[in-house]
Image (tube, rainbow, N blue to C red; front, side, top):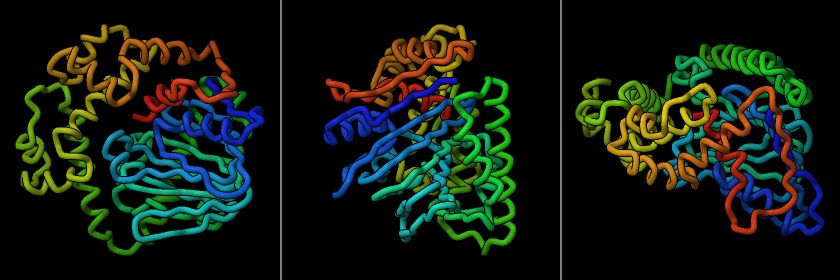
Length: 343
């Protein structure tokens, strides 16, 4: 089981904060709040899911519209507060998440969380592990659930965090599947009781259809706005509006191609060359793929592949302990490659 630990080893708060911010910089913007600071993390990589057990105080995490558009993340996260309190902000809502409650987020939409003191277990789940009908039928972004609505999911996630370090590869796969089934059943129950779907969620459904169409045709270098619009049954103007927050349709297609290349490079049983993988993802040339990949991920495809392969072997569990920020300001490659598990 791959594990990354950020412990309380640093004597200076400034060093501890910089180490934590660097660790998370590939996925969120971290800011320091007034008051005591605590930034302890134990993270585990499972198939198509990441688990984080954190002791936090005096920090906030934000994914603004620009970051959402830039990184192309589309996974779902669950934040279970075991002790203390976490605050969350999503468009049009600010909510408190008390101990024993669970908050859900859609990484394709802006969000902010902060705490003055809490222990939080987070599960980051690849979107394809959840039933699209459930995701399309319920606005889960910023949703807060207690034991009454999500007791089984809460109990399972708590237990999973406690035992994740000792899971075999087979058990890790079963754990991912089990949590996704429990969460899916919980969300389906909520969906069936929900009010009519609001317009933002209806637009989300159309965008989900477009994303699925794009992913199925990434290898087609002639993939165009007209092709995508015709494929999902909307006008080009509607398609442009759907992807305006992501920087446009062309930019989104580039992000999906980078995501596919990233996913392929992370797979230990993928033996095609980087040039072959770039062609399969629809890039116009290997050099074009390399430039876009480095811009998005921060490292060249070859370096990313070597790092991912070095931590992906199930019979070679690796434990890394981070005790100081990287002097060059580059995020530790661990979470950068781990995000490929969710694309």
